[in-house]
Amino acid sequence: MSEPRLRAKELDAADGLAAQRAEFLLDEGGGGSGGEAVYLDGNSLGALPAAVPGRVEDVVRRQWGELRIRSWTEEGWWTAPERIGDRIAPLVGAAAGQIVVGDSTSVNVFKAVVGAVRLARSADTAAGAAGPARDEIVVDATTFPTDGYIAESAARMTGCTLRPVPPSGIPDALGDRTAAVLLNHVDYRTGRLHDLPALTAAVHAAGAYVVWDLCHSAGALPVGLDEHGVDLAVGCTYKYLNGGPGAPAYLYVRAELQDRFDSPLPGWNSHAEPFGMRPEYAPAPGALRGRVGTPDILSMLALEAALDVWDGGVTIEAVRAKSLALTDFFLECVEAYVPEGRVECLTPGPHGERGSQIALRCPDAGDVMKRLIERGVVGDFRHPDVLRFGFTPLYVGFADVERAARVLAEVLAEVLAEPGT
Ligand SMILES: *Cc1c(COP(=O)(O)O)cnc(C)c1O
Image (cartoon, rainbow, N blue to C red; front, side, top):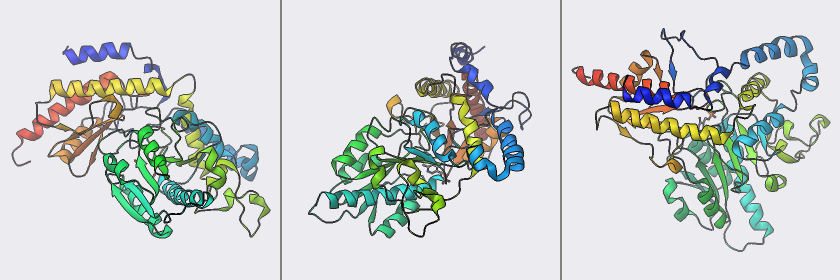
């Protein structure tokens, strides 16, 4: 057995989270590709937790089919957005009562960015600030596209200028014109982890409000929203939280800001008295204020069942430790198997700057990923030349990592050997 294969065996034997894999339905022996797949795309769509199919069946057949409308109260449908928010809260370092689940990440980015601009302006007004009104929104120039598109529209609607700035340049771009700053905790392409505590402090020093997008960090590493004084945050639940395709996203509004949070989408679900059916709007207190319309109950309760995998003592710190061990080991195996210079790693080496994925650049990345998937190693390709491998510590083991790197080396050699590719 090769040296990396022996190492993988040792690492798997010592893995305190190894038993969590049984909480998921993975294709052991029966994968679509005819064998057991190595699934390294949990940063795009998390695998299916074993508790979900039965729960969804119950929600559809009994709660909807038999109890029908009674389920809004008797099965807790109405309060699901806050209840499930409170289950996500400990994973992102938030006390209860600050997270509400619903809508997509894109929609929550809109609520949060417009809400942040309004918070900044109302704070200045309350303080009797002299200078010009804050009229700039700063956005991470390397952001996932939807965040940039929404921020641009939010800027136009609030009379702000949008300033796309690379994350390293953010502190220098802030000033007394800055109203809101929208940042990604982990870059979706490169897997770079940004310095949330330092950037949050810099935004606050400028008197502005920060919105963090946690899509690629929640469920993979500690976030510390309360500890670091984050104002607003959003994230999706179908990546490292395994909520299922299109599972609802969430919105965090820091407790001290909730009374001043003025949602640009004040639907009836966020009303203080939703069944009062009043023509005038009066916002509900607390996290509820982030709700809009009727929640997407089927997806939301699938997510609630998916969150069961975090019960029974799984800590985000243990998940982070294993995530770093997995990505370190993957880099070690790539170095052992892949000829030098064939791929370039875009993900930073230092642990403090690394999320839970490894991004490798190579010229024929699209073709390489297609062949990897055919051989049961499932990552993804990001335009124009990036191979992404996501590592979900709850169900990925070290033998998977070794196999992925070995098959990658085989595929790379094969593509190189073929004339004209
Ligand atoms: C995955 C992801 C999204 C997805 O937004 P949707 O509205 O769910 O499609 C948004 N932002 C970032 C940074 C993401 O990684």
